[in-house]
Image (tube, rainbow, N blue to C red; front, side):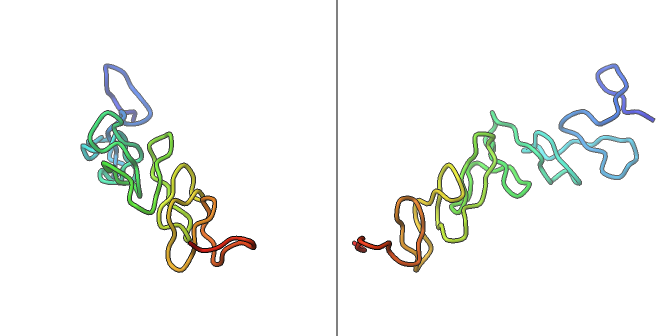
Length: 118
C-alpha cells in the first residue's frame, strides 16, 4: 500500500515525516528536523533557515559544539582527538588538548626541531 500525500501516491512518506512502525501512517518529525530517521527525534537534516541549522549526532543545534567544526553542508564534524578546537577540517586545529602544542594548525606532542615553545 503506497503513501498518499499532495494528491498522489508515493513510495515514501513526505519529507519532514516518517513511518516509524511500518503502519503506513506518516507522523511529523521533531520541529527542529527537516527530515528524520528511525524516530521523530533523530534528525537526518535540519532546516537551514531556522534557529537550529547545524546537524550533530542526529540533533539540530544552533551551533556546533566546541570540539567540532561546521561543514559547508551545515553538518558538525568532530575534531581529531588531539585538537581541543578546529576549523574547516578535523585536522586543522585552532587549539590543543593538554599536553599537546599547536604548530601550523597541528597539535603535536613535542615542538618540531629548530622551534621553541613560547
